Length: 62
Image (spheres, one colour):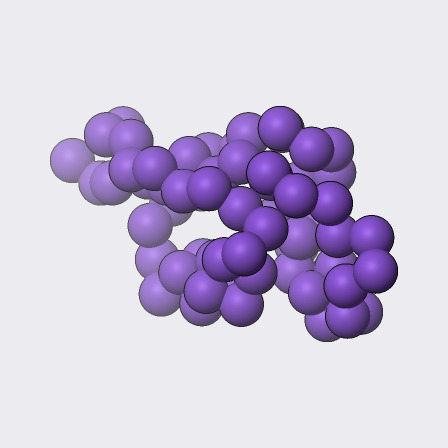
């Protein structure tokens, strides 16, 4: 069974660099406390690492 990641935006991207804002939008996050489910892939992990100070991540079976 493939693992998925539950990604929650915990801090605002206001005042952050343009690239970090684009990563937040690329993950599908628009509002604080919004949660999205994404597949656990190297690409998604790289995006999360770039904005790790803004998000909270949990593994979900699915």
